[in-house]
View (cartoon, one colour):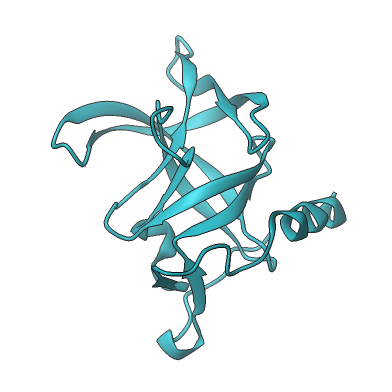
Length: 158
């Protein structure tokens, strides 16, 4: 799936405060994500995080929209410190994965792994993933399309 290049502000897609998203390389879909232009990075709910001895790969468990556990394996992009909204900085593992939204938009994004079990959405999409492509409508939700539309598009790409 080709990465979409940034477009002029007048042509950017309007995205709601929540959108459906798929991470097909990880086998995670559908997933309800929160759009957060105040957060720099993306963050995915992850439990049972296991970093390989050579620190090149990570395995973890996450959940899809249906509450099914999905065991994932990915190359580690980097390790970094992330400051939460409460001001606490923690070391996190970052991976890269292609994010696919309804309507055929896809982009390689950098994602930190964190326990987001207390949050309503297992995935937070930060401004680094949004920049150059979207304008955010804080009153809207799922403006790019339905969960079923995304699932149908995923089947078409299989």
